[in-house]
Image (tube, rainbow, N blue to C red; front, side, top):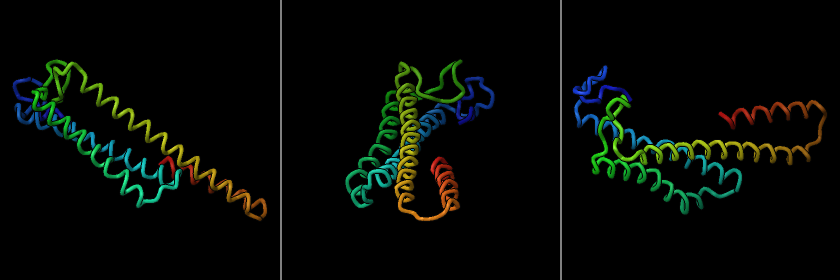
Length: 167
């Protein structure tokens, strides 16, 4: 995102575009909402697979089509609707990018809420997956025979598991 797509008439540093490039930038920014939605979809897949033992076949037949529809159609419908309504234009004195202006701030709030939800869901799913893996490891360790050296290796494995889950 830069000021290059802004119309030259705006007298913004780096503005080299016109109204069409401004509209194109607005559309691409909204279509970029598919990224956090797909990321949340992947997190949901791993959460359901690891924590709730849902099979990949069941997920791909029942849940995945709806996630694809949501991840693709929500940004696409938003971009088409707001562009058709003429909201894709530069905001004077308030932004250096072309966004959906004069839409009573509702689109901005909706997009902010959607990104916030995706972030919170990803954090929740990763924490739940991590907790599930640690719980499973504890159940397995109850049946493990060995010395205290095996116990210290278990602690190192747990720390490595947490680190990998959070990354």
